[in-house]
Length: 410
Ligand code: PMP
Image 1 (cartoon, rainbow, N blue to C red):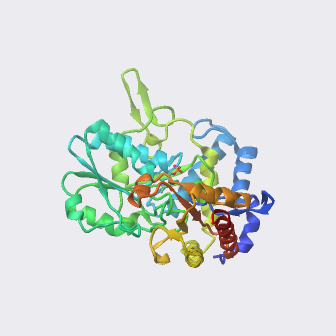
Image 2 (spheres, rainbow, N blue to C red):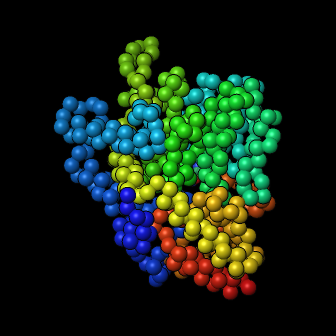
C-alpha cells in the first residue's frame, strides 16, 4: 500500500488547487461532499468518450463494454464493503435513496400497525424521515435512542426499547453532525438478542473514512454514497443480506427490473436488478469503483487515523481560543474527522461567511440533524470536516480565520 501523504496527494485533486476570494482554497466541508481525484475524473471521461452505451440490452460491442464496466464496478464496490457477492449490492442514487428503498420495499411489506421502529436522535434526516413516512403509512410507532452530553448512544434502557414489537432498527454508523463513531456491531448483537428486528445502518459517513465489513457488523442493510468518498454525485449503494433481498418486493417499476411483463402483471428480474428500474447511473457506478480502487491503495485504517489526528489538533487549538464549545465526544479516538463547534456571541452562519472570504470552506447550519441540534439546545453549529487530503496547515488557516471572526465580533 501507498503511504498516506496528504500534501503529496493533493496534487491529484485539481479542485483543491485554486484560489477563492484571493486565498488558496482550504476545503473543510468533506462531510457534505468530497473532491475528486484524477483517477475518478479519468474513469468518467474514458467511459463517456469510448464505451458509452446502455447496459444489459444491446448486443453490440459498446453495450457489452458498458455492461462489463458497470457490473465490474459493482463487484469492486461490493468487495470494498465486505459483501459476500456482487448481487448483494444494489446501486442507488445515494444513501438517501437506499434508505427510502428499504423503507418502501421492505417496510411497506413487513411493518404494520402497532409495530415499532427504533431510530436515534443522532441521525441525519435521511435516516429519520423515510421511517416517519413509513410509520404514517402503517400506523407503526417510532421510538428513539437518546444521546449523552458527548453525542454517544445511551443504551442502558435497551431492554425497554427493543422487544417483540420492534421490526426495524435504523441508525447511523458515524454521525455527520457530531463525528461520533458508534458501536454498531455491539448494537446489532444486542438487538438480535432481543428481537427479530432488521437492522439498517446509514454508513454515509463511515464507508469513506474507515474499513467497513458489512457481514462482520451483522446488520441486514447498509447504505452509503459515492460522492462522500471521492466518487461522483448521484451514485451510491445499498447492501442487503441475500435472503432478505430475495424475499423483498421491488421498489420502483420499469425497464431492467422485470423478467416477464404480461397484461395482468409481471415477474421480476433476479436480485439485484429487481431493485434497479430504468437506465442506471452507469458512469456514476464506474466512477465510484474508480474512487474505491484509488482509496484502496492506502493502508486500511490510515484515513481514519489521519482524520482523528486532525480532529485532535483542531480540538486542541479551539480549546486554546476559549469561548468555543465543541460538540461530540471529548476523546478524538471516539470520533471521525468531523468537528462541530460554536463560538460565544457569534452565529455559525457569520463564522462560515467570514471564513469564506478567507478561502476557508466549512458548513454552518443544522447539518440535516435537527434532533441533534434540539438535544443540545442550539439551532446551528459550525462544522469543519476532514478528508485524507487535509493537513495541519488547513487547520491553522481555520484557526486564523476564527481569530479574525473573534476580532470582528469582539
Ligand atoms: N446520512 C448521513 C449520516 C449523511 O451525512 C448524509 C449526507 N449528508 C446522508 C445520510 C445523505 O446522503 P446523500 O445526500 O448522499 O443521499
